[in-house]
Length: 168
Image 1 (cartoon, one colour):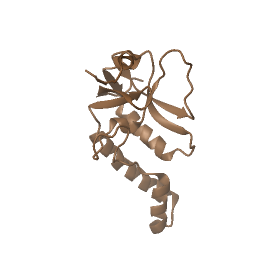
Image 2: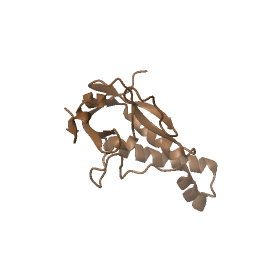
Image 3: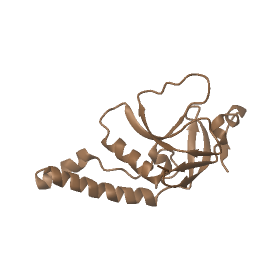
Image 4: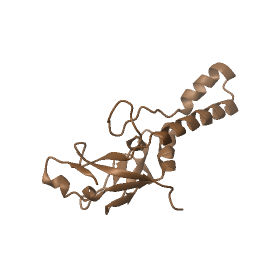
């Protein structure tokens, strides 16, 4: 059951307040991290999206967010959740943040160039190995409850999370 953190009745009336459980594929969480770590376009990010109309159980879908969000004024907007929303943070409860940092191809390339002359195969192999370690850490740190923000940054709900593979 979600906990509403509201200072006004309007929040309790928001359609997203109905969400009790978010269902997400752990592969999508990892893939969003990977895409964000390798994304070269500064206005593009990879998130997990909850689309209205909201129900008690919502499935999060991998989504590409490009530039500022623009939605019609009527009806609720989709909710975009950073992949870090689903991952534990050793530094305490900081929504949308985690202490786990995905390796970047540029950082791996720099390290490999110092030792292996930057051979493409060596860079790719080192990146794949480091990302596999990061992926194991993410999967071991998935949260059972998450905080979801809407209406700006001060309105939130806590909701349960269930991890299951996406149906193809």
